[in-house]
Length: 133
Image (tube, rainbow, N blue to C red; front, side, top):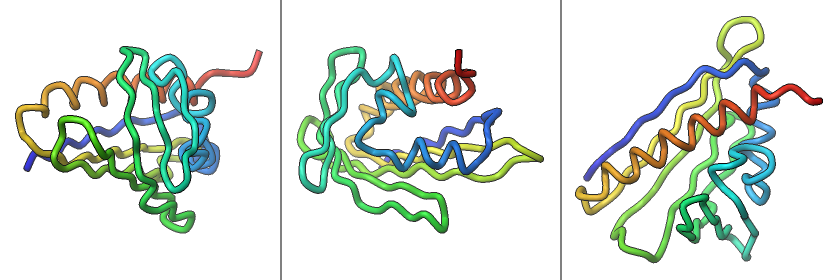
């Protein structure tokens, strides 16, 4: 099983980063603008549309406010196994560290998922560090 780990430092308070991560139904507005172009809640899942046209159904596993950790599992599609989590940590005086871990099968999709996560991390950093106009 492949395991992908991405981390980024964000110039924003951890409580603000966490508020965006935990807003699971509006990831396209609050967390990863441009990378995710649409998101809608559907029962205990969300349907996410990415800028590349890919649409995924993600079961919401847990939103842990104490640990600032969100976990989910993509279902359907070509992956036989997928689970992921995002967790927010305080970094310095007023910064944050976002850690995004994904486990998946089959392994041949590791490159594609890793590249998408790189794009996602960049979009999250841009979105969360943007200053209101």
